[in-house]
Image (cartoon, rainbow, N blue to C red; front, top):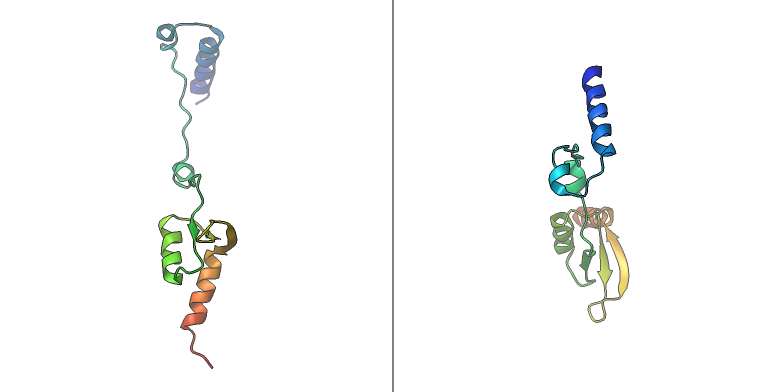
Length: 104
């Protein structure tokens, strides 16, 4: 294993020490590709936040959060889209649980 590592570091240092302005000349010394974690790339969030309105039903908001794999939604005003609050998935579950419990 040490032989493989030493030959790899030796070949990568010689490839990086040679300077070349041509892509054809540099294609011979292939650099190892950095592997990205699949969970990292799959878990990336979009640039725009997921939003809901105060009039949306609880089930609709829960489905939206699950579909977009987010743990919270921004609650915005329907007219000017100003932020009025944030609802977390824990909040949704708490309200859902309260609605299912019989009144005493």
